[in-house]
Length: 293
Picture 1 (tube, rainbow, N blue to C red):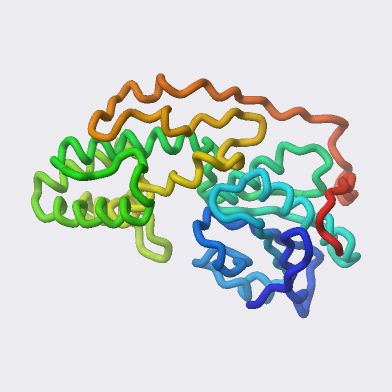
Picture 2 (cartoon, rainbow, N blue to C red):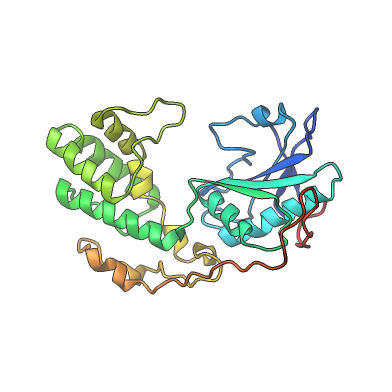
């Protein structure tokens, strides 16, 4: 389903033929390229499933690709504001996946954002620093136990090259029982899910579970990190950036103590103002520039 581009990173499709008054604003996840199309829903769900049920579906985009949480928050709030101006929207629900799930969770903490609910699907709510630390630990375990030579653990090489090299070594390691055991340990350190493929039955055996973990190992453990270092959006709102090259150990000398080299990231609890809204009333609308209804 094609989306209509609006200023400020808003994409508003045609309304449903039988509108139910609820708009769903989707926040897409991390995307490395700039030519990726706008997504109105996760890839596993076609937007027509929602519009056939009366929902108006919309999405947001950012001017820059990669890790752009702060920009994503602004674009989403602008989209919500534009939808509220339509006159046929009674409720706005923001939902997102991965990085978009973090955007949705952040919007839930903003008083007066104009949303009635949020849904975070596998949201990256720990932030990039914690995720990169976890991925680095898992990559180090896999490289040391598997005897992987020439693997870039810290992102000095291009992201695509790192992932391709890791994928080839992963497939080679899975060829023996000992290799599969080592990969299983690395997957456990990386907290990779044993059920990762949408639309498949829950894996019932360790072999089937490892197969699903291996399916996401390449991009989850050796995930893109190069564009996160210089970009201000690499940090969650209100937190300092710490994914600089000097924060990571030199290639070939990974260490479990790498966490201690990163500065602590302060966590600010959400602040709430006012009393709960009466059922059926509209939230206070907050003006966000950049999106023309």
